[in-house]
Image (cartoon, rainbow, N blue to C red; front, side, top):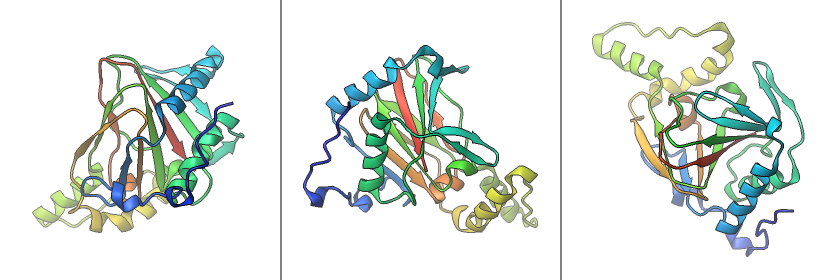
Length: 229
């Protein structure tokens, strides 16, 4: 059984999140050394001890899905294994940023010369996601959502702003559209270097206003946890 050091002094349990804000967005938080090297080794052991059938092979990565099946109407939940609950419990306790216990985890493995194009995780993970990096450094890119560029372009040309969305995205768009006017002048592209054992959290503006995230190709194997509630 993997053990996390939950016996730290109480004044170290909840982090001062404002000390870890990076870039221009107040909702982009990077916490280095969130876990120890020993804890990282234990996590990797659990990850690679699972049956081969637990892995899903995709074009530029492979992944494990824990916590249930995400579909257009929400999550069909399954209980997380104990070794993952140790991680999700610490993130929930120490950050205070998640509205409820984290209940879903994607473990992505990227081999040398693999990466993923910019994308958005959608309504299922809204409004906050955490990424725990393992094994080697990785660069992650955040770029403004195309609709923000469209707003800025139409404003500059004097056109009336109209935002079209697919029917299945309507609920997400309703939440997003209220943020567009405040975000379009404040979100700029940015890249972050995520070191092993670090935790990245992005929420609110960084979640809905960015077409995020893209993972750069590198020369080393690395593993990314993507966690949501």
